[in-house]
Image (cartoon, rainbow, N blue to C red; front, side, top):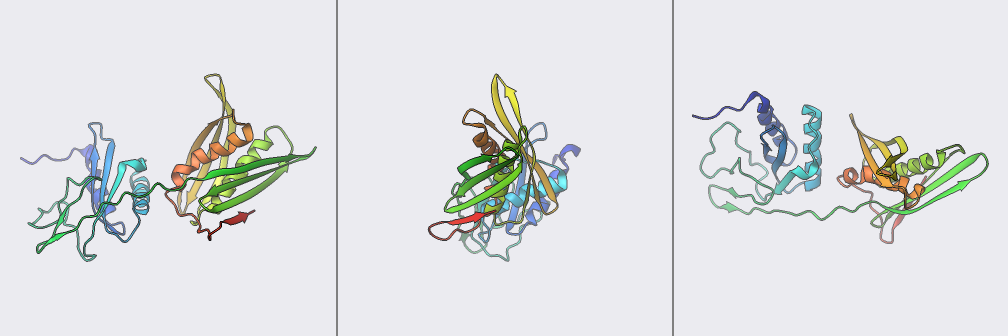
Length: 268
């Protein structure tokens, strides 16, 4: 007798079908643990898109439709060479002989079989995406104002942002963090909105840490990202590192602007 899925897991088939409708995706299988938590999302995709964009779309779909926050490293993408016209079999239909194998696809292996001859399967291991690095941070204070300047780099691309405000308690770190957020936005090729939601100092285990909360808005989707850094390297630098800690994992799934050979500089 075939076992029926529990009501708790009834959403899985719908989610697999939705993911299979993402551009470039052919098949999908979602694994759950005994508590119903997602342990892996296994995706078979074509060669027309970069794997990181497929991962981002899958992550966004699960968040938007089901309210699920699935860590991107749990989403595995296998790219296969084959005909674009090939359609994946229905999830509930028995797979005919020679059809693509479903239900046991993992990020480490994939196999597709055609009626006439085997199709080559290609597994691509994407290179580590570049991370945004701190190029420099500076503060200029007068009796009434504070001016903060932050320079960030990713590959050959540089961005520099300047923020100015009233000279009051804590304004220097706030301005540094805002300049860092704006510099990150300059580096991105995608139309996202980045906003510093909060920045504060906290005491943890006898150490002072800087905590940054950054809100990222992309289309209708908005999320709040948190980053931290020990204040020991210097509080202005720690404010920048806290912002980068909040954003680096997310923005490495996005596209950076192209820099001409020799570098490029953006300023605000």
